[in-house]
Length: 139
Image 1 (tube, rainbow, N blue to C red):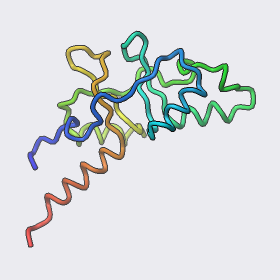
Image 2 (cartoon, rainbow, N blue to C red; image 1 turned 90 degrees about the vertical axis):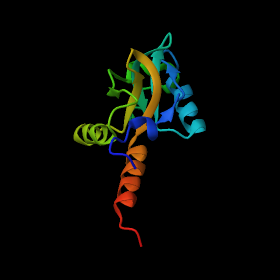
Image 3 (cartoon, rainbow, N blue to C red; image 1 turned 30 degrees about the vertical axis):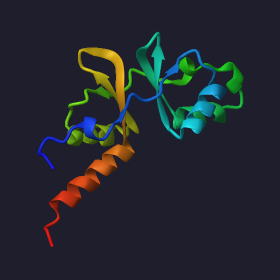
């Protein structure tokens, strides 16, 4: 395993995205059908935020909220944490842990509003497991 382990090696390339006008109930159904906990939110193909399963749960826990009348843009996290695909896994994982981020949106460094991947805590744990395996002495 090389010294410079990149996010690109572990990210989900070209993840599904959702539009900010999508209703919460539809976004929740899409997350369930895709089996994901995070979806980048776009406006005309440009990154504007991220919707997590926690955002959905918090919105649904409010007695005054009707999921059929709430749009993703109203509950998403704007200005999400991003990195480029060649960022060091350890630096990104450290930042995620420090701020309790469940995921990082991977963007094209030349076009920072263009989503190219999604790096999650599960991806970070897989990278950690691979690093530990690589450090084990040969039998």
